[in-house]
Image (cartoon, rainbow, N blue to C red; front, side, top):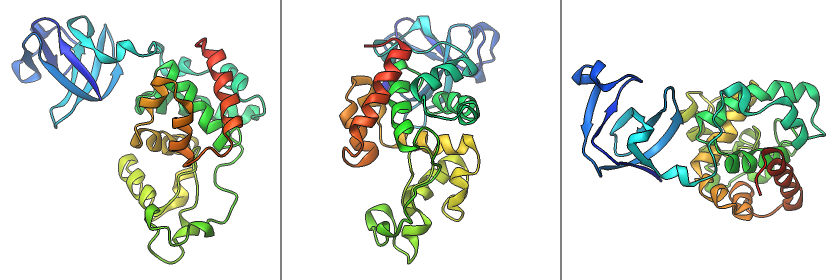
Length: 260
């Protein structure tokens, strides 16, 4: 889990503003050396980050110069707005077989989920895009070709009712599978996926968000940050099926984003 540590007397704030301009109810003082665990963070304006703190400590804005940020030791955060994070050109360079329509359809949703689900570093983006490129056949497949019958009775996937295997077969850019995953993903996204599993592919954003939720729920960022692509693949696939194909997408992505 990421952390922030105050390197001077500072404040947590409820808005991007000078602390002196905020009422007491919108800020809290922090002593030098105080450390917090961070569940989620994102870039904000004027040198700030928005951080969601662990232990129900709330969501706040911090001025980055006042804090030691654990993620600054990771790959460089892509400091661009959502529309520029990925482009049609670099997606096409990674997935040359993808149709132009699909490339343009998924650019904005992928940019959004990359920020929404804490994927906005070059290492994470490269690993994530490589995996969804393989799993979706370069955006061609929105759901698993097989019927899902092989998942029938799989209690490890939460498939406890007759017909669950077919009903909760793989969907989304990472092929979300199993009643339990649909339930948990739906709760996170605010969608009734357990009752209506087809909603997982109702639009490009949901299709991408389902994949990003699964990625985040398995803490895959940890291994993407380490460059452990084999472990990333095992967490997505359960094994190393299609590993060479995944790997060639990863190599293309790293070349596009200029990382070793």
